[in-house]
Every structure is written in structure tokens, then in C-alpha cells.
Length: 135
Image (cartoon, rainbow, N blue to C red; front, side, top):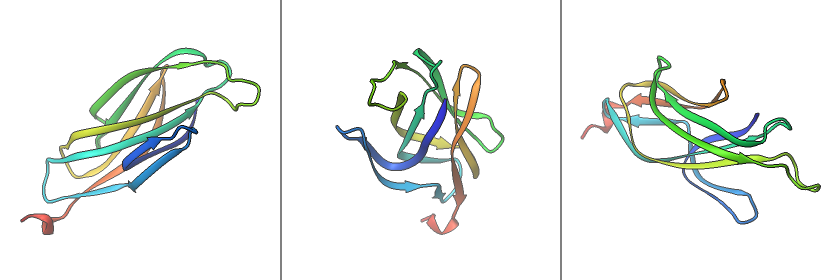
């Protein structure tokens, strides 16, 4: 398994030709106080699979807080098949809208992908308190 990309954005869509259209990439959010809620954000991830990785593959994605404790967990699976002669290695592309995520504290959060005991850190998200936003 090889991570091709992982990002947080306002919105993302996989086009018919397989390309990804992304709008509003970010790595930090500001809140007037904590806990804080983000109404909507999208996690986009692409993974390339090794030749031995085929069939139904179970995975989970955790949002880890600054102490590496899970805040949310997303469980899923992907079906990986051999590619045709003129195609590259098989890939799984995930575009996951996340709504109403509550961040209990300020600090650096991380998304982490787990597959068959292997863990990959995906992308950080820094939550920053900004008292000027109180109003």
C-alpha cells in the first residue's frame, strides 16, 4: 500500500475521467473556543495497491486528537482487482464528506489510515483558538 495523496478541503469530486477536482484545501481551522464544531469538510485520499494486495480490503480511518486518541473512526472496505495492460497499479480513491465534527480541544489533529495492521498518517489539521472570533 502506498499513499498517493491525502488532503482536507471544502469540497472534492471525482470526475468521469478519474481526475479529482478539489476546492478550498486547508490544514488549519480557527475557533472562538473549545469544544468547537466544523459544520462540513471533505477528506480526499488515494491509495495505490501492491501486487499482493487484491480482493476485499477492510480499512479504517481515525481522526486522532493531539494525544493520539481517536475522536472519530470511519470503517469501510474496498475491492481491489487486477488492472488492464495499459493501466497503472490499482488504486482506491476516497472522497469523504464529514459533517458536524466536534474538536474537543485546541491542537494538532491527524487522520490515520489502518489496513491489516499497517497504519499510515494521512494529513494534519491544526485547530487554533482565536478569541477575536467570539462575538
